[in-house]
Length: 114
Image (cartoon, rainbow, N blue to C red; front, side, top):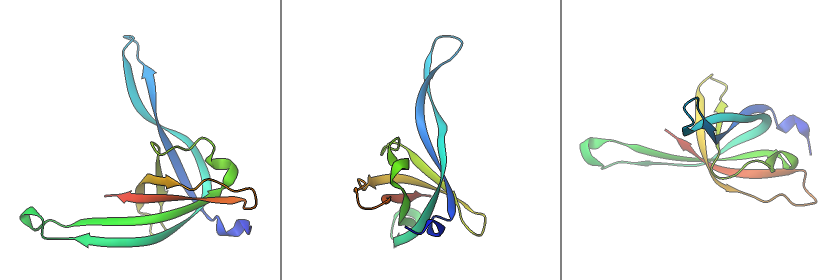
């Protein structure tokens, strides 16, 4: 593996149940970890013809990370990433490819939330 290909920082967020001072349970999104990754766009489509001529974009990406970093990541987490132009993106996880013994990286397939 060439570690130079993991050249972008992503943030992994998880929904955590916390109890407040009134002993009420509430959920809160907290950053679980910040790791190095490679973010590559895969497909994009533009859906039009919706009510009021609104358009909907469906963009998918694949995010490559080190295999040992995937242990705590589940499909109910979400990922944030800031591109080269400084624009923040949020991705919902569709599928996490299980790591294999012979490969030090694994892939996470995500869909961008707009």
